[in-house]
Length: 250
Image: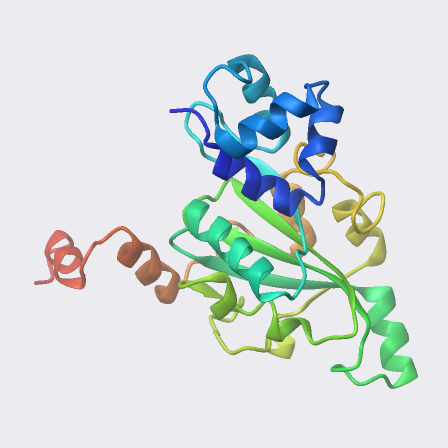
């Protein structure tokens, strides 16, 4: 099957790197790489090099699916065009939606509480952790760069696509207070061992899916709700009547 240039471009977009930086990191000719990304000319970039790029970005080159594990994508900014690209990427890999865990390091939370800073005025450094319904072996850490703006108006379930909810199942714009995961600073640094924007895309060996779930205080198999089940069934084109027949209740 292979991976199209469009998919490579989308993943490079959320990697926080330029196409040139990806080529330099992997010792690929920058001119040939730029030409292939633009025109997808057969033979311009060899299969071995394309497989190398795919693995670097967390892709299975043969199937076009994300590799199992923890993937780290960067905040593309609040620009409408950027959000559309992020939404397109999420819909491509996770059409069935999932759960968004908004996380925040405890030390910042404590300092702001002591200072009496209003929650809408915080200069936030945080991360949204995405648990897709269709891939229990994949987690996405979406880096949120420090910003004076309300994150919830940018990275709400509605903006990520149909089927995404906060942990409580809510789809309101702002995450309910109880849905926030306030993480001990030492554990939060495991998400970003070199800080926000450290440049790692995939394959941080010290952080596995079970490790990340433990940090969040969840179990990957315990967060299914009827809303999540319904969204997955709907994404697969399975009707309520069909489900009822298979369950023998119709």
